[in-house]
Amino acid sequence: MGKPKLWTKNFISSSIANFLTFTTFYYLLVTLPIYAMQELKSNESEVGLIVTFFLIAAIITRPFAGKWIEKIGKFPVFLTAFLIVFVSSFLYFIAHSLWILLIIRSLHGIGFGMATTATGAIVADLIPESRKGEGMGYYGLTLNLGMVVGPFLGLTIMHLGSTNLLFSINAFLALFALIFVIFVRIPKKSMPIEDRHLNTNKGIKSFLEMSAIPISLISGFFALAYSGIISFVSVYAKEIGQVQAASYFFVVYASVLLISRPFTGKWYDQYGANKIIYPSILLFAIGTYLLSLSPTLPLFLLSGALVGLGWGTIFPSLQTIAIEIAPAEKRALATATYLSTFDFGFGIGSFLFGLATVKVGYSALYFYSTFFVLAGIVIYYLLHGKSSVKRSVQIGRRKSGVE
Image (cartoon, rainbow, N blue to C red; front, side, top):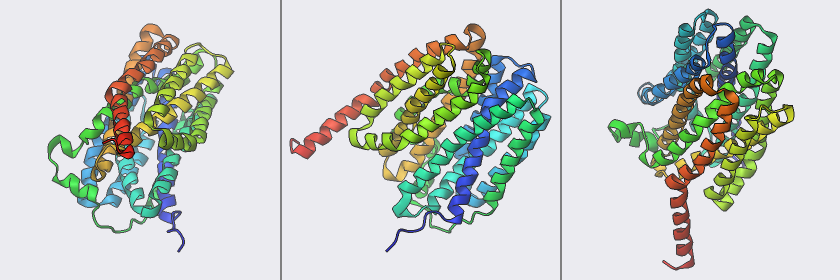
């Protein structure tokens, strides 16, 4: 008997919609700070709010999106989410002041939070059970591809200096995403175990998986430093005379991430989390340090490669831990807890980074961020690494018959 089919029309359409969603996310992430500073005359601290408003709106929306999915179904939330993204994409044309832009970003963030929640739930239904890992792996690559295409396209357009073209392409991408959403047909399934369990919880436990909180806090900690790189590297590149290199920074970053992902995943399974995460933190720190040197083009791209290899390994490894330590019936909730905490750290980090650059500048702040990332070794050890070693020892003793 052959394998059940993975690459169905519904799976492909959903994955393309997700790819376009994250393409527009990264497209605007690297271009709006430049737009706000050049066209709206905003300063660095105000620019940080552009990311913060978006992500806070997405974070607040996600738990409610899950509730709406339970009440009215996946597809209505799915379609509504992409309609909101589509409408908000056209509103950018009237963003002639910072506060109007922040309102639009909040609306876009609501649509983004709903879209990412609904798309993940739908794709999980579309993938055959026997190919779940494979299918989710391919689905996850759409995010990484968006990380390549979005910044490269956005910074190329910014280099041409046309604001109308910038927002027109964003609107067309949102339109294409909506078209692919319309063609998705969701199979009817009984409510999964995870959803039945969530319905019995009350209060904060209906929104968070408590076992995943420590590892999620580690993710949020690193997101503080990561946000400063992703949100401001394009502005920093312009400051040090590497404008054209900024787009290639993301190409190198994401390419290294994509190439290394299969190998780092196997090493994680073979050697365990600690032996893959500690070296990755060091690579992340070295990449941040190289960025602080006001680098030449080769060093600038090398920093992108090291950050991509380091953070590109840390993020999925921590997410895997969050899923592994949670009870099987709470894995979906653990994933939501992990991603929401990361988004919160990313949003707060962008705002704080923007405030700090006014005082010390980008180069100095990336230098200080190096030590912040290194401090993550201690944070990881205290919140998970130490207990991970103990669990490994206990498992080894049981296998050897000591216990």
